[in-house]
Image 1 (cartoon, rainbow, N blue to C red):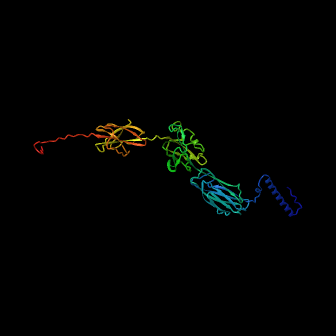
Image 2 (image 1 turned 135 degrees about the vertical axis):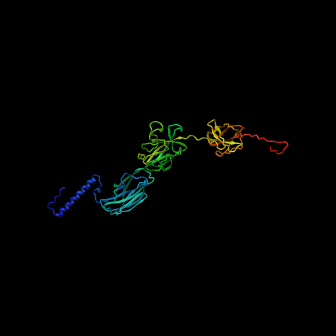
Length: 444
């Protein structure tokens, strides 16, 4: 554009220069609008309020369960002095407790900064000049934050002179985890392969312990049922123990790898084989499973859940009943002599008046208890007594005389008491007396 100013008066020339400048501005604005840009983008007199957000230590800093730190909001006024009140809102994630909120004492243009639960708000006053104004939000990671790993916090302006495209974001990492145990039994409760046990199929309980110089220490969580995740805990080396086997015999652990939200595919990575082939570090036969802190650096599901597989073999069925055998010597008290007996021809055991046979487990049904002959004693018979452990034997035998084999039937979950009666063969004596027929009390 060319201006013909020669011969013009000074006032006229000034007017033409201003007109030319205005024309350029209109041209530029028009070009911006033609490109689809807002006319406001070319107006440096429009006030805008945006937000930047930072976290103590910088983005990605680790903050453990129970640890405190702070976020910083930087409220930015640009373009021109604000002409309306603008609200700054920061909804702090539920993994944290908001402890306190404070604006920079030098930030006279912020007011009403505070919190309602985890929602932090501040108001930028109308008339705030171009500049930056700070807000500090002190927080603490909850004891059970509900999430592990990266947590993102975003703040934004709204209303008034808000630039809604200019938001602030910061993130931290919560190093923590929780464990879920999956129970496996032999498929037919006798042989392999192993089979996963679903909810309601048993009551296996687990306890998690902190590490104490290489051994289980303080309890972190207890009473954790299989298939139920434990509470979240800080990333650390822990120990896991099956504290209630639900009547089964604990067999071993499998610590799977890989990431997935499902436990079954993890436990099915490989058949449970604790005895053959090349040793696999993922298997353990120890009652206490040590889980290193580095395990929680692997990928769990989005809530920090990590899966552990526990294997049990069914316990031997408990005996159905018991037999106890006692001795009664009819003509001697507290006779210490040991007698021998057996059950169904099995391994002999001893007993006496001073020491009963002990509690012998047997199956439900008929059994024969036989007492061996003992030199110096006559077998009298046997009877059924009452009260296992502190028995009461009848005053005399009820069997046929001289019977040393007791035929008994043992009921389920019951103790049968058998009393054998013997008479001790005592030594005999000869006494010699004198009678003098014609003298009384002869001393000869």
